[in-house]
Image 1 (cartoon, rainbow, N blue to C red):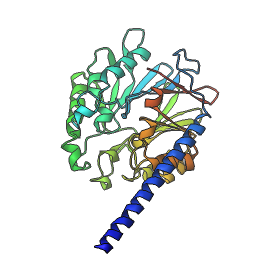
Image 2 (cartoon, one colour):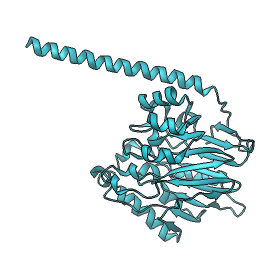
Image 3 (tube, one colour):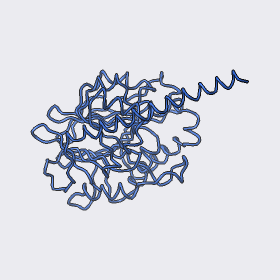
Amino acid sequence: MNKNRAVKKTATWIIVGIMISVFVLDILTVVLCNIYQKRYDLPYESFTYNYGDDRIHFLNTANSDAILIESNGHFALVDSGEGDNNPRRAMEYEGFEDEVRAYLKKVATASDGKVHLDFILGTHCHYDHIGAFESIIRDDDIIIEKAYFKEYTPWLVKGYESGKWANDVTYDEVIAALADRNIQRISELPTEQFTLGDFEIQFFNTVTSPDKAGEGENAASVGVKVTKNGKSAFLAADITQTTGLEKDLAPLIGDVELLKIGHHGYFGSCSQRFLRALKPELCIVTNQLGKIYPNIKWNITMVAHAPVYATVDCDGIIASFTDDGEIKLTTNIH
């Protein structure tokens, strides 16, 4: 009995020590984040195009992705944010269909009164990335030229994703909406760069490798590199080291100035190897800063030495690529 008690006591102290260490490291990284953030002034967005019209809008859709790329009058939407009917613990998640459509109409309406999107991209079939697309696609005031969606691969997903999370149902609803609106759907994504206004756009992980079977839907994530005048941003969708995608893609992506952190700063994203390869000067996370995993904040601050800005804390962020080669951040965009 005494031996068992001693073992339990030792295990308790080890666990407590680990928890205290994690807590201290988390506080340290938050302090460093706050210090690093002072490198970039974040004035409120006035929508007067003070820094030009080549911009990436990171919408505040809680812990989901909705990213609008704008350049010289051209627009594209990468992911749509959380929809209103998430099959995964539906009551816990707020939908953003109305907010995303309202934002598009606020900033991307043309002279004919319609929103014109050169393309939309669904990076992968998780509801927090493509859940609001059906509502956007079916909106008569939003005109979409083409839609990039890879074929759904049931052999990729984990059991709970096709059941409880209903990835396949979400995908089918989006594809049906595209067909109903007669919107061109492209399943074979381009591998070469193409232009959107003054931006160069390049997709990564355009074909899901069979060796990712069983790794989960995040392994299908399409990354997007956006470049102007030698300055680049990488939108990492839910790319993680745990699926092997960070290792696969890092040598292909190259250096970037801005990184949209993969997987909302959750488990498996932003490995030290990935950050050393990309060398981001600043990071944006579609989440709250306090929800980023401590080890990921550690990697960002101690390895990349980069400030990280959270869309929820800032109520959305715009990154403007100026003609003189700077990236200017503005906030409070909603």
